[in-house]
Length: 190
Image (cartoon, rainbow, N blue to C red; front, top):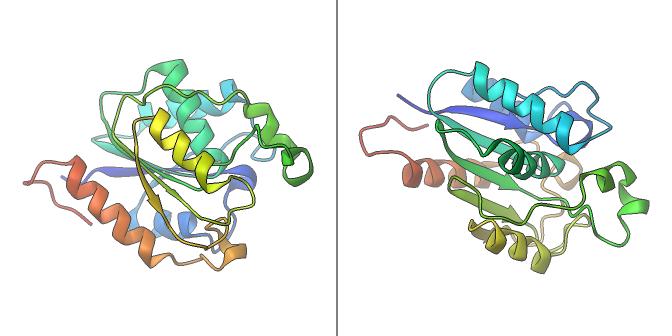
């Protein structure tokens, strides 16, 4: 059985054309719909992720973007993860403690302080070298703290629609490779 994807969007809910929305349709993924996608809080956003994980059958792989990555790490801290979560693809983690976050995305500051404990499942952090919401060294430090693998995506912005990532073929390759690493050989993969 192929693991089910659980899509964890960032601020604003990863709007139309975003690679997360495309993957939701393409893979029949579960979607974590926040009550207020413009006002993140660690407790409320983690609680919604816990609800979706609990309601989604089978083995799961979390696919988070931006502030959704922060949701995943807060969820892991608050709930300890879940035994059916096989791994997480964490793309463009936003840094809520970045000095100019008050100007860039003030709502994200509510997600500070960011948990920096090892995650209870394998994870892959994918970050850009020129993301305005997190420096590459900081994203790499997050990955190290979470005991996750780190992949530089090059200079590709925030890996969203604004940076030219509606469809994201490189992301699909990374997802496939991660699924291969996180699931037994007899599991059917995407």
